[in-house]
Length: 336
Ligand code: EPU
Image 1 (spheres, rainbow, N blue to C red):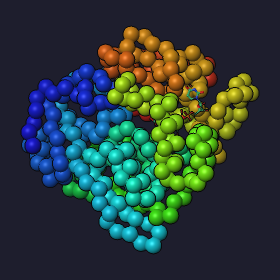
Image 2 (image 1 turned 180 degrees about the vertical axis):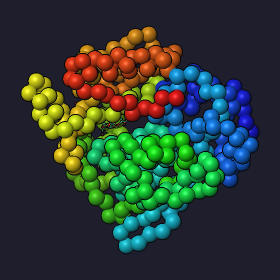
Image 3 (image 1 turned 135 degrees about the horizontal axis):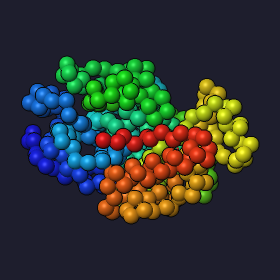
Image 4 (image 1 turned 90 degrees about the horizontal axis):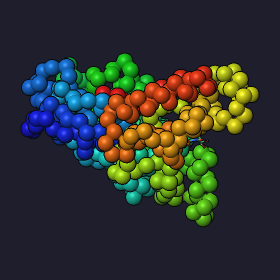
């Protein structure tokens, strides 16, 4: 457990922003984390997981801690379910593959999401009709002040669309240590999200399986979303805005092809990518900051963009969407 100084964060953020941490250390378990926090007793501490939902806008003057807690363990099973615990520092897609290989169903729609297991609950990652909250059973998180590990059931986490209690009420107070998933022994397939059905058809799949769904999701994601190892990005930069049915219907009169998705409470989720594209941003590039050519919701760093370059572009996009549609886009990415 060594604290390194003036350490480059470029390899640790998927936007590939070239900034450094004044101090940097890796921890492998909660005891090491407690030790580091006792040694560095200041508030400017930030725990990094996969770095795939973050935009650094400058050097970090405090201590960056990289979550290196590993391990995947089957902790119990019953007639219908397996309960699997994964260390927060495990790579998310690696975990998904581990489950698929063992025929544990539930996370296949979440294939290829960049980042770590521990980052998943913070923003309740979701894709193609499934959210993390659907498969999460409980998690353990370390509290920065009392330096103890606390257990949270799925109901304790306050999950919403790309939201949890760890992003709101408990922001920067807890570090996720491990997550326990409840996965199905007999799969329940989620193929209602349009693009999945189409892709499965294209693949000529006759018999549905979690392997086939995972493969379909991987194909869709690879065709639309830029690989962070090739072009820096953090997935969707903005959330899809939620509006009332009345607002949606009024917008629809003016923009009849505006995509909207039903929320369980009757409100509507608008496709931010569509609105950004309509404003002419798709494929736009200014210096090394850009709006992805295949998915307008994704902002990209073509090489040497700074966090401020990306943020300036994001602000311009927010303004133009607001001017045209009267809708305020909210960032999904965490700006530090
Ligand atoms: N669309 C456009 N132009 C674009 C992008 C999208 O017209 O440039 C339209 C599509 O044609 C479609 C609708 O918008 O009618 C929705 O597009 P898509 O299925 O690509 O999904 P999304 O709403 O843009 C969300 C998530 C993604 C997730 C996909 C699939 C958010 C903020 N994003 O994107 O999650 O992979 O659905 O479930 O909810 C992420 O969070 O980082 C992420 C990539």
